[in-house]
Image (tube, rainbow, N blue to C red; front, side, top):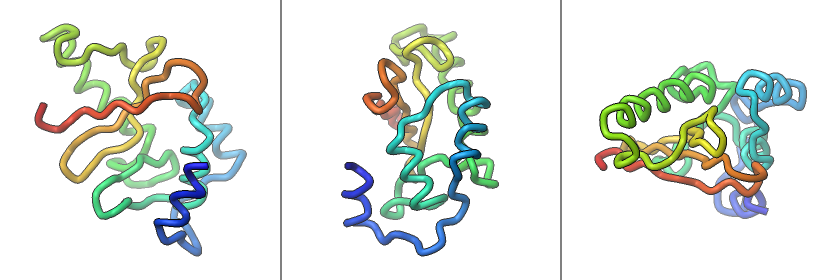
Length: 136
């Protein structure tokens, strides 16, 4: 449903860069040890690597760019939150972090440095999005 909306408002690439196949998604699931939302996988398959509105960069597990690669960014983004949690406890980050149950899992970033996370509670297609502002 969301993908249909995006296809109406975003130009769909004729040949998306670094999109995935069913087999490749199966391998990604083994690497991150979690089932990812189906709309995210459909988005990556349709749009590949790229920016939305010159502002939002979804991480892509098939990207060769380490700053956009989903797997590379999991550790990088969560390590930063772990440091904050060690120093400040839950005041700065009141959520558990992946791979903890119902933990935050990063899936994108903005040009401002904001990071977008899924709160991995419940079925993947029902996960909420949590945004960590860059300067808060």
